[in-house]
Length: 289
Ligand code: APR
Image (tube, rainbow, N blue to C red):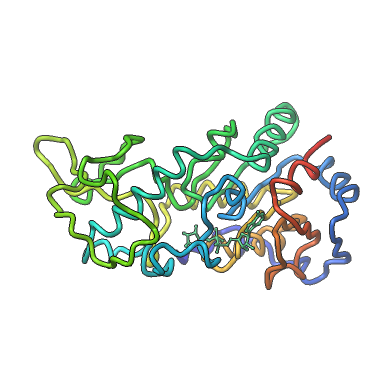
């Protein structure tokens, strides 16, 4: 996860350091800016799904069996104990299947639809829960993949899979409160590729720590970032790269950046607008006409 988009180098001006205003919770001022934008990017992280009941990663309730994100979302952990990682994904897939998009996801989707004739709205999401699509967003880029897609570790085939449970051996497993840190599920009982000539172990189609984003995804993100006028940064701790660098990239290109979060991040003072509060409350306010 280290690719710096080309657009970063295209913009050498120091607009980013010359910001003239920093507004907190000024919806009217933000709407004036948004009204003039032709291309809008909504960069989202786990916080936008918090009010749908999906745990974030770096808050205490985000820990699954006390495992930190860097351990859980890690190809080495999967190699050593694929059963443990699949137990986690079984737990989170079942939770998300029952969850609903919240008012924040819906506000973004409705904004895109209402302005489809005049504005290009693109959601760049680090989330793998698919809730933007379920809310009705059409133009989205899933930077880190999707938990309802599998990838074969042998033939690399990617398939959509919403089975519940994804395989019989995982039924009833994955409790987040268990203290088991080693799985007793045998690898042969985990999901496998159905192609007769393959049969490889399947993994979630997700970018884990130490893995690089797909080139096609980075290229698409690069284009929308270089053309964006206004960017909403929603519910992300802005510490995982490359997405953490995206607002800086866009600001360097002259975009106005507005952050929506329940608490300020280290990057907040560098942005133009800051809206404090749950995004299911602030986004509908910011994106209504
Ligand atoms: N509304 C808005 N923001 C919220 C809300 C809410 N209701 N609840 C929490 N937040 C904010 C938190 O303050 C925090 O800044 O959401 C952010 C969640 O941060 P993380 O848990 O670090 O999630 P994220 O930034 O999406 O993580 C990035 O890290 O583990 C990897 O690949 C994984 O995509 C993930 C990436």
